[in-house]
Length: 235
Length: 235
DNA sequence: CGACACCTTGATAGTGCTCAATCGGCGTGG
DNA sequence: CCACGCCGATTGAGCACTATCAAGGTGTCG
Image (cartoon, rainbow over all chains, first blue to last red; front, side, top):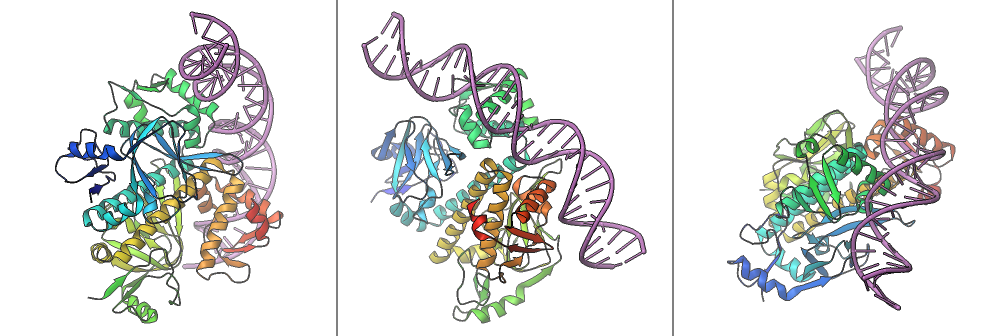
């Protein structure tokens, strides 16, 4: 059987595309790993639903390209986006211990993903102390991110939330090398930002206009440009 | 060395006090385990700070008696309570993989806790598949709880939040056998509820009055009484 | 009895929502 | 190549939910 490895949050320094899943016969060269991984790669269009809250699935994914998001729906249609997933992020990792996911996942843009069988992956991870520890770090990190979002939603103004939200994504995008100058691709629409931060799209639009007017940042046509990182940090 | 075990969320059916940490030489009788555990028990007054966000600690606790809460503070004094901890809950479990905790923990009432050394505990857990799996379930569960809270804060009204908040605690209190008739002890003040749900104490008070007027529940002097569980569930 | 913490109530203000109309970009199909 | 339709962004007016400020009440504990 092939060696199969999944990168929880720690980046794989030797990979050209950092922090990616690798699916390989040997540990040595990450490039060949990525090549091998291609066997299990799939491409989906924007809007593809990976999981529906409460439904069972055997597959765990890792995002190779594009954006996705985890979300929950209320019976009356209200939506809360829990987090955005970027290339390198694992999708549905909780399936390793449970049959059902407590959230849904959807592609925000066209995406390509690597697919893993959850049982194979679980068996593999449980056999290696290193992987177990990385899994534990992964849990801690995602838990910490959720708690951070709780703080944002509970105790910060709309203005502060948006500033922090953008900063957070900027950091993650930068870590993946998506930054060109002071600009980077930014897929979420105002509606998505609103659903992530507990606001309405209209209000998000107004605040974004404020920030643009204040010379802080510009967000247009899927491109985010930071004009004044210092001002943004101060909020 | 003694056998040392910590119950992640699953209750230990044979224990008189369910879902408690056990610290024992043998697996058989849970009662003697609890007796043995007493060696490592400590009592603290309300307000005791177990962790301060960002500070290191070697100790992991499990709550034996009383209430505690996890929270975060903003520089300007705003506070967000992340979750409440009840008897049987583990405090600071993330310390098994990291040196610092991303939140603070404080006792809400007088409490008694069992103390574990994080390294001893980590070594012990990593050696047993069963414990690893239970730890994984624990992460998933707490992550799911955080996501649920994000949904509440982002997309539900104050009225809905409070109803859900109380229902959640009722369920947990009931699972631990704290229910007497339709009443149970309820330590959080309106201020704590407010800080947990991103509201002000004044507004929490008004909504609680509404609920009392509607014949749904009464919350007074640390005692919660549910008059109409069905109405509460419908919200 | 006083101090203190917590709850209650009232009046007022503000943040963010709702509703509605307009505009622009982009993909589709004729 | 242009018309159409759709989705997302923008703007305005008005309102609702929740916050803020302030005062008074009640219980508990030393």
